[in-house]
Amino acid sequence: MERIEIGHGSGGKLTRDLIEGLFLKYFKSPELHSLQDATYLPGFEKIAMTTDSFVVQPIFFPGGDIGKLSVAGTVNDLTVSGSVPKFISVSFIIEEGFPISDLERIVSSISKTAESAGVKIVTGDTKVVEKGKCDGIYINTTGIGDVKRELSPKFVKPGDVVIVTGFIGDHGISISLSREEFEVETEIKSDCAPLNSLLVPLFDVPGLRFMRDPTRGGLATVLVELSETSGLGVRIYEDRIPVRDEVRFICDMLGYDPLYLANEGKAVVVVDRKDADRTLEILKSHPLGKNSQVIGEVTEEKGVVLVTSVGGMRRLELLEEDPLPRIC
Image (cartoon, rainbow, N blue to C red; front, side, top):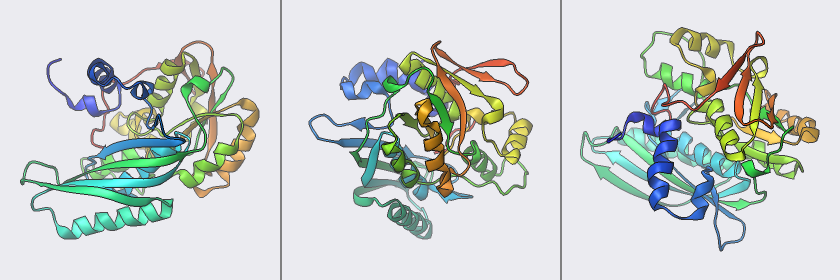
C-alpha cells in the first residue's frame, strides 16, 4: 500500500499496521510500545500523559459537539489508564470563514465540560488555514493525570470478568444519523461524557486489572487488542451485551455491527471475579453506570469469541476500517 487511506484512521487493522509498521519503526521510546491510550512518564513520579485529535463530522450532534468530545475523550483516556485527570491543553486548527458564533459555542462547551470533569485548561494554540484546506475545525488535546493505579493488559488473568458500563453503539449511530444520509427519526443521542467521576472510585477495588474506553472500533476492537496484548482470550455473550433496541434496529437496517461502533461515554473494565459484585455496585450507583453489565470472562486460549444468542460461536477480529469514519 503506497498511500494513506481513510481506514488508516479507523482504529482497526489498518491503523495497527500503520503504527507498528511505520511509526514504531522510527519512534523508539519504549513507552510507546504498550499501545495504550495514555503512557506513564519515566523520570516523573506518578504522571500519565495522553494526546488526541478530533475531526468529527458533523461538529454538532445530538448529545454533544466537537468541543465536549475533545475534553471527554482526553479525560477518559487518562482515567482508564488509572490516573486522575488534572490538566489539558487545547489547540485549534480553524478554516478561514468559520463562523465566530460556532467557535464560541464550541469553546463554551469545552469550558463547561472541563469544569464538570474537574480539569484545568492550562495552555493551547490556534492556527487558521485557507478556506477549503480544513473541514471547518479540528481540535487537538493533550492531558496530564496523577497516576493512582497502574492498569495494563499484563495484569489480566484467566477467570477475570469483563464488564461494560452501559449501552454500546449510541455515539456511532448518533453521528451516522446526524449526517442526514438516512431518513430515520430517532431520539438516540451520543453518550459523550467524561467518565472520571464514574471510574476513579474503582481504583480502590483490589482486583481491578484493566480499563479501556471503546471509542474507534468499538467494544470488539478493545477486546481483540486486549487478547493480542495479554496473550489470553476473551469470551463474551451476546445476550448480556447492553444494546438499545433502537440501535439494534438501525444496525440491522444499515448493516452495521454494534460491537464495532464507537462509544464516547462507556468503558470496558476487567476485574478479578471475586470483585465483580463490588465493581458493579460502584458503577450502578452512578448515573453513567446504571446499565453496567458483566458480559463475559477472560480465558486461557488467545482470541475473542462471541457466544451468540442462539448458542453459536463467532470469532471477533479487527476490522480493516470503521464503517463510520470521522466519528471522533
